[in-house]
Length: 112
Image (cartoon, rainbow, N blue to C red; front, side, top):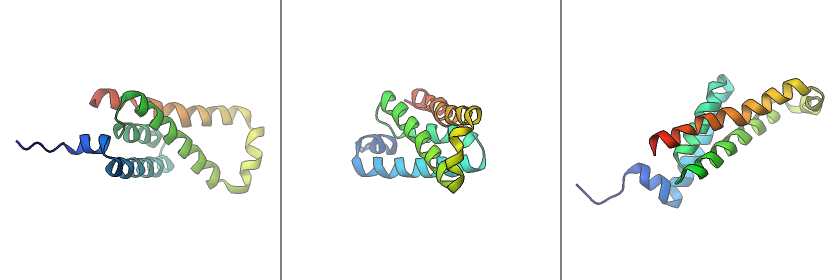
């Protein structure tokens, strides 16, 4: 056996592979979220798997949720100005946008 670290360890410890893995995870997760809400769970899972520690995995999952919410806000364009007046829908949207990636971040605990 060679002494070289596994890909998972390289992604979690080396800056360049870490950044690439995180950007790919966010891109794939947000792309999946445009198709189905389960993509938000996948975004959180993928982002957290690149994290070196569990708390950072949770933070990465929250960041994935924020990115997904920002992409959603950008996709609705000028209609975004009317969103604050739609309170019940906004609560569900923000709750799902942040909560579902957190659910996905449990993958980091399982894969440790």
